[in-house]
Image (cartoon, rainbow, N blue to C red; front, side):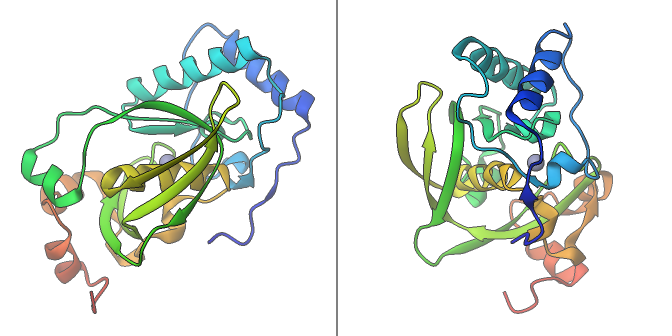
Length: 220
Ligand code: ZN
């Protein structure tokens, strides 16, 4: 966990102003990188800081940014907005062997507000992951294999869903963003790999070769 994530000091008015600036800029916003303070704040729970139209426009914009990146999730703090909103979608074509090893199944688009998750069962799995706010790196992260997620849908309804495999990994990664946590906080530090090194050496379906050669998770 990240014990140092303090609640954002942005007022509701400043959050609204930040969103308005992004919505009216007329171009896709830049994804902020590690070191930006908003990535380390506990984002404000959504409680009406935006009206329905603004919320819808922000979610549409976040989806466009996620597609362009490209990525499978984007949290509002990654646009410098300390508000508990994230979008998720995984429709990429993945090698069948990789998909099977990682439990990666397509995730239809959805947006979540004020999410929290709890592990289901004791099973944990380790795979490499990356982050659009940590350019250039990949690292292995041990995460619960399945989670239950509570969140609010954009229409205001309370939702409970269960996720496993890669979907559960995406859900945890994005929820962490809203709580000021980056995946590196949970990563095996000896696994950290430059993107080019990862692609050249460690992109097998599982992490067993990387674990052995880089020396992480020795007892796993
Ligand atoms: Zn991320």
